[in-house]
Image 1 (cartoon, rainbow, N blue to C red):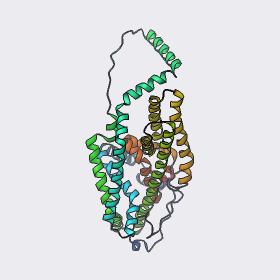
Image 2: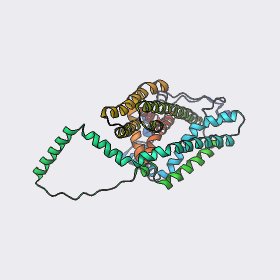
Image 3: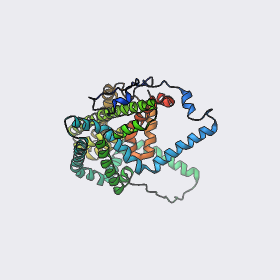
Length: 395
């Protein structure tokens, strides 16, 4: 996560690096790069007006509400764009590496995108059958797990029934009110918003990712060209370079960690006798991209599957228990050791951001929450008037 707000170091031009975008060195030749402004609440207050009176605060509040509602209502437009930009951050180093060996950027971008699509299609093809079987058996699985859990909570159920009888006796209402059941959207619709919307969004992501990779740093060059002041040019280049370098490193490192979690989980499920261990490894890899919530969801899924697979309750509980131990080792030892002091975000701010982006964009928003917040913090660290926000986001 991002470096502390005491001053994010400026990234100097490095023509040999594949983690940072290219730009014209002449645009940066006359001044030293900024080292990041010190937090100054006065500068932030100036954004609200000369005296930060109630009128200006209200206008800023209305603007923020308009932005939030726009992101929420137009998620089908914004979500593919944000996802494509993050994929561009992740895959740009590979395209630059191919360019250094002689392949032009459009050709390199095509190879990278097609290779990624081939891996995804192959994985979905191999895992479609077992995943479909689990989804089809989901109602029976839940009922079986519920039946087995009743043996563990008999006393609790008795107390609950006794409390219900006392409540009915106190109310004196023997009639049973008619229950109204409101069906929410299906799980698949919650995840993807329907097949048509999902395919449309996936198509936009694929093509936009290719175009972003193929044009390289064209937009950064144009941004530097249109900004009027030299200081603004330097700030834009510094933000772009640091954002791409750190987000690329974060996404690449996180992907490796999550793949490692998936491999270890698959091996553990195989040793414990769970069917389709590879599927559970893939599920662990994908859900581990969602901080906090992903591990909880994976534990619940493993517990449900284990209660159906094993007759012995203790053996069934061993499956989610083993995954919890693996997750604790990964989150408290492996990940901190690998990340070190890079991209540090305040834990409370990160959790609030996770909830916010989950509310705005659902599961995809939760997956994208950390990169989005890291990008916001990097920008705030290099814009003087927004430095206090970077201070609050930092650890």
